[in-house]
Amino acid sequence: MSAIEQKSPYQIAQEQFDLAAEFMGLEDDLRHVLRVPKRELTTTFPVRMDDGSVKAFTGYRVQHNVTRGPGKGGIRYHQDVTLDEVRALAMWMTWKCAVVNIPFGGAKGGVVVDPTGLSMRELENLTRRFATEISPLIGHDGDIPAPDVNTNQQIMAWLMDTISMHTGHLESAITTGKPLGLGGSLGRADATGRGVSFVVASAAKFLNLDLNGATTVVQGFGNVGSVSATMLHDLGCKIVGISDVNGGICNKDGIDPHALVRHMKKTRTVIDYPGVERISNSELLELPCEILVPAALEKQITADNAARIRPKILAEGANGPTTPEADEILFSNNVFVVPDILANAGGVTVSYFEWVQDLQSFFWNEDEINHRLKLVMDASFQAVNQRAQAHKIPLRLAANILAIERVAEATRLRGIYP
Image (cartoon, rainbow, N blue to C red; front, top):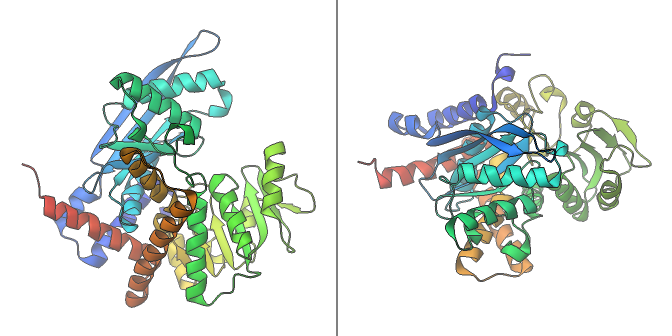
C-alpha cells in the first residue's frame, strides 16, 4: 500500500484543500485559516448500563468553519470513530454546504461505540449524556447536529429533548433529521439518495448516456444506498450489483431494489437474497457497469483498485470513498466522478429546509420539498460541471474551488476580529 493510502481521512481532506487552494491562488492567510478546524471538543463521559455498571465512552464534536452560518453535520456511532475522521468529515461538510450555497458551515460529531451491543435504554442514556457534554457548542444558531452512521430519527429526538430540558423550552431547530411529529421534514429520510439520483441524471444527460437499461452498481445498502438504488431503478437503470457490510450480490439480468428492501427488513442483509451470485465488496466495485455509486465508508477506491474500476459515472453517495491517488487514475481513465460534496449534498440541503421550517413554524408539503431539492442539486451540478469543463479539471477539484471561493469571500468580508 502506498504512503498516500495510509493517510487519515483528515490528511486526505487537507490535501484536497491544498490542491484547490494552489490551483485558485488562494492567499496564504486564508489557507492557514480554512485548512484547519475552528473548534474541537473531545469528551469522555460515563453511561449507566442495564446491569448497573458504569462504562466510559469517548465522543467528539468538531466545528471546521462557521463563517457562512451555523455549523451543520451529523453524529455517528461507530467503534472506529477517530478525531481525525471527524475533522475530515467536518471539513467536507463546510465545502458541501458551500457548494450547494446554503447558509451553513461545517461540523461533525461521533462517539466511539458499537451501538449494536447496546440496549435501547443504554443507547438513550449514551445519547442524552453525550448531548449534555456537547451542549455548550450546539444550538439552532450555532451548531445543528443530524443523523449519520448508526444514528437515526429517534436519537435526534432524544438529543433535541435533552437540550430542550436544559433550556426549559422546546428547541425544535436544534437538530435535523427528527421524526415528523417533532418538527421533522417530509422528504428528509430519502433526501441524500434522491440527491444522488438527481446528479446521476444530470451527469448522464451531459455525457449522452441513456439511463434506460444503464448497468448500475451500488456499494452499501443503508439509507443512502437503498434510496439511490431504488430511485435509479425507477429512472430506468438496471441494478446489477449491490452490497452491504456482509458482502455483495450480483445478477447481470438485474436486481429489483424495491424487493431487496423488503427482503432486508426481514433478514437485515442482502447476501441471502434469492437468484443472485454472492461476491465480495472488492469484487463488487470492479464489476463492469456504467454507473457506480459507492455509498459505504471512506477510502474504498484506492490506488490498488482504481485502475480496475471503469464506470462511465461514479457518484459518491458516501463521504470520502475515493483517495486522491485513486482520483488521478480515474480521471486519466475518463471516469466521470461526481464528488461527495456535490453528489450526497441532498441530505444537508433538506436538513436546511427542515431548519427553516422549524424556525418559521410553517411546513411545506413533500412535493414542494422535492422540487426545491431538485432545483438546488441541478443548479449546483451545472455550476461545478461548467467550471470543470472550462478548466479541464476533475469535478472534485472544481467543486472544492467553488466551495472554497464562497467561504473565502465570506471570510474576507467579515474580516479578522479584533
